[in-house]
Amino acid sequence: MGIISSGFRGRRSENPALPPGQHETQDFPVLTAGPAPLIPIDEWEFFITTENGLRLSWSWNEFLALPQEEITKDIHCVTSWSKLGTVWRGVSLDALFENVETTSDFATAHSFGGYTTNVPLWDLLGGKAWVAWEFDGEPLERAHGGPARLLVPHLYFWKSAKWIHGLELTGEDVPGFWESNGYHLHGNPWREERYS
Amino acid sequence: MGHLAGQHIDLRLTADDGYTAIRSYSVASTGMDEHLEITVDELSDGEVSPYLVRDLAVGDRLEIRGPVGGWFVWRPSNVNRVQLIGGGSGVVPLMSMIRAHQASNNEAPFKLLYSLKSPEASLYRDELRRLDQESAKLMVDYVYTRSTPEGWPVTPARLASDTLLAKIFPAEENPDVFVCGQTVFVETVADWLVMAGYSRESIKTERFGGTGGIR
Image 1 (cartoon, rainbow over the protein chains, first blue to last red):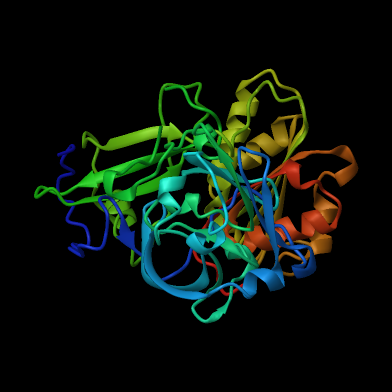
Image 2 (cartoon, rainbow over the protein chains, first blue to last red):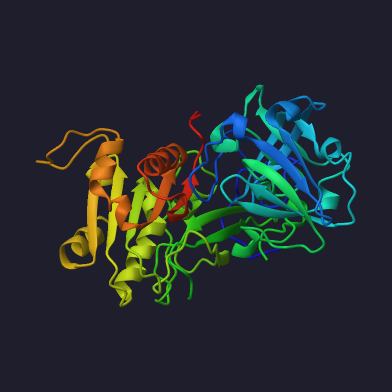
């Protein structure tokens, strides 16, 4: 236990869905390091590159033609807010990886606008991650990563790269943008993997 | 304690039964003095800020982590001119940069554009006024959205693109731009800057609060 702050009681939410140190918000805060990029839908694509030089890509229409899933998940931001029961629509990374042969253990997510974040492949496959393009029944707002963002809800939300462009598979765990700026390489909220 | 201007700390409060709450606060001090200063805006429905503002007493111990963040920061080695744009309490990390700049021998010009509701809402009011008058390397401009000081030449209004662009370093001068405030404010300002030709790479943003329904 940390230093006791005498007289502090807090709000006493004993919600077991909240990881340690998190508080629930009804709002949907936006945290982005720079201006939100504007991506015309006809220029949008999602790619996967492998260590063998294979490059798969999907246009917006090809992406929408893939099996779509409705996803209801809690999300947790490293700045300590959590939003419970958020509803998304998108494509499972399992579907996108269906024809990908790889021995890589890690991926670097690349966003339009230059943002990057690293995620172990193990955290992206097996029904754990999606490319989401709808939030709460509406097309994803640009401020929240529209037209589409990565959704990796079991990790802190900076891993859910906004304006996702594609995944580069790598043999090593290469720190992305926030990971190079002091944040944890992995980012599991239940273990409070906030900072490096 | 050493830190970079613009960084933040995580502050963790623990109740006597182990319940904890964590919040991030921007650091307002320069990193060169021995004290760490934060500015807390009390939210009436807040869990942590009312405690910090009303209950915390001299001598109480606090658990902090950091300073953290290596992105929304200004370093004295940076030779570019700097445009700071703050909305409301978004001025806090910008003040840290202003103080670090003043304390350094970095002579690159700084400008602050501070958008706020009323003169009374100004954080660091006397210090900013003094620096604006006395420091040759800092210029401060205000935009008032609800009420103005007596004799102010313009009526209060929300910040508009042309007002903003008239008061800041032009894009041709390639300033480093730091924008901090509520989400809507930051989104709007950042979009105007990009449309006016400021390069995306030169604009760093820090947002707080909800989306307020922007698309």
